[in-house]
Figure 1 (cartoon, rainbow, N blue to C red):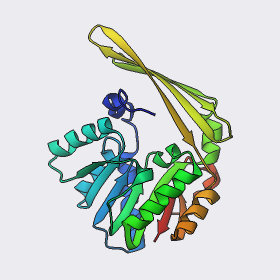
Figure 2: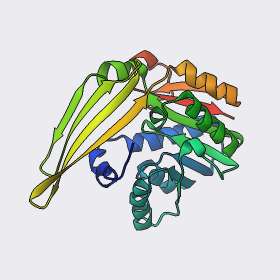
Figure 3: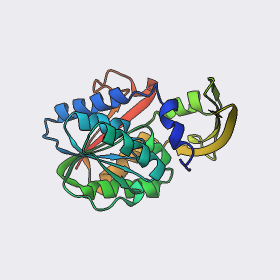
Figure 4: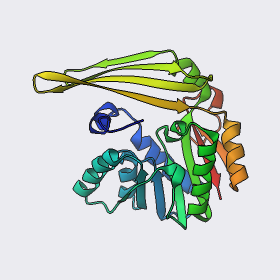
Length: 247
């Protein structure tokens, strides 16, 4: 997957993304854990929307992403808002150089882009060693039923004067293995420029993630759904699941 052309239009495409909810949910997790949180890593931070919101809440935060183009967009925002955020270019499967971090977060389907169990294990192990002795790790994934019923096999289209896209989601080799075929038409002057993206995602069963986390050394693993800590919300009927683990 490449974000070379995608980065410049990413924020326009994601105007309805629940960034405020991710930031508020993070604060709920911190309050519920009754922990003093100072240092935060945002893994797969993209253009920094969640990172910036958490920085505005007073956390010392570092955004990590493997896309230079995404990080460039993020850096412009933090500079404009005079926020002291560190931006680091790294693949999170090879995360290195961090220690005694209080909280690691990874939102907006980042872990769905980690498509092999070996790489998921690598991310979890590297996060584990980056945290302090009772640090927290929280990430989200598509709910498996949501991926199967509402994404795979469907086509999504959005048309505006400035930017249009066609998004086709097709199943890969396994049930929750999916390929997103995206075609964009961006207006440049009097003409439209076309470019294409292919994104590969995979959703594993919750038991796979929890087993990997436990094997790495995490404990007190909890599953939440759709931005709430209330377990009344059925995991089976949710769109997005959150996995919280304590070192």
